[in-house]
Image (tube, rainbow, N blue to C red; front, side):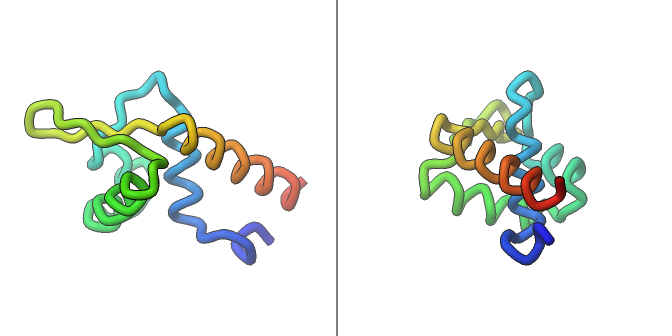
Length: 86
């Protein structure tokens, strides 16, 4: 039922990024969410433009972190998912 209301891949990725203890490189996000690197790169650019994530260059890799606004959106998505599935 959740897929009726939300796109699964972006929601899965935002849920992953809620784990702020991990360092989230673009390639790690792609692998953990079972999506392509290209998809993750485009999605992260879009999310950054809308203030949901920050992207920092760390050497050759880019590290992604949720902003406070992004954390609120990710939490709301989790609540919706739990409501629809539970």
